Amino acid sequence: MSYDVAVWAGPRPADDESAEAEYERRADVLEDDDDLPPPSPALAAFLDELLTVLPPLDESDDPRSPWATGPEPGDVSGDFAYLTMTYPGAEAALDTVVEVAGRHGLVCFDPQDGRLL
Image: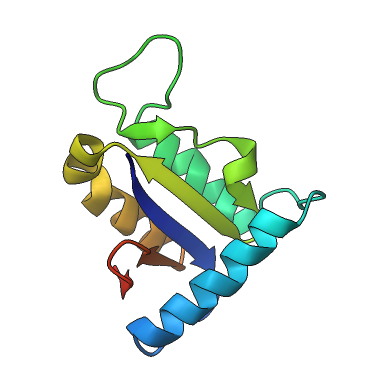
């Protein structure tokens, strides 16, 4: 099991319900499209910064890495990213993910609880 966070570029939704609708729309596109665009400049910069602060998941199994998978290329498309962390990783790193996303003007959404972060 993982703790998932959706991150996207665009205006911050007015409330959790609007955010959930936007998340579902974007997730459907990510799931249904076989020819996904590369990360937008905003998402690429976010991921670059994020992976300098939080070690990527790789062969070294760095214990500071919060990731359950990736972030991998299939987790990011255009201006939408779907990040999966372990529950202990999320407990340790979620605030960092939200902070870095905020510096890049991105929206963070918790699909488990259906709420903006």
